[in-house]
Image 1: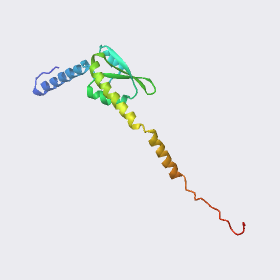
Image 2: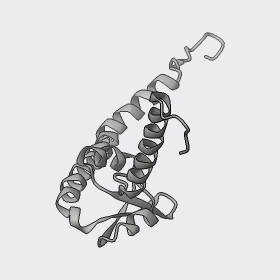
Image 3: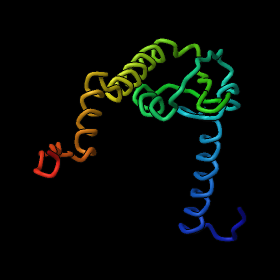
Image 4: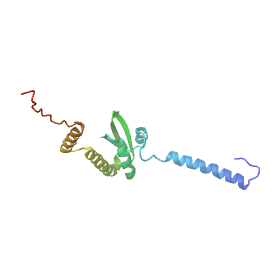
Amino acid sequence: MKASKLTARSLAYALRAVGRKVAKARREAQTPHGKQSVKKLMAHGAATSSIEVDAPKVFDRVARKWNVDYAFYKTGPDKYLLFFKTGQADAMTACFSEYSRKVLDKSKSRRVPIREQLKRAADQLAKDKPRQKERVKEATHADR
């Protein structure tokens, strides 16, 4: 910065400029945490492991609680590979156990027992089917 006269305003301007450069350097040097791309996760330089996952949205919610670094890679329709740092294996174990418990609870809540299904089907048939009165033909004098 060039100035013929160093004033408070020019000094404040120079300090803000230096502060912005320092903050930018700090952001670039900081490694990302949480969900990220596989490329960024591999750039950390740490060893990684992977697990196959079916519901990434549920895992996202759980992983935020445990502050783990992870990345998803789509392998097929509704199939994902979850990459994570091997150094965070303890946190990942706890995180994955909570995730699996949530997935199992979700699948159990959707399942309806077979007897309940049969009962509902019988009730539905009874409602849909109009009742027919039994017609009994009475013998008339003409039939005799």
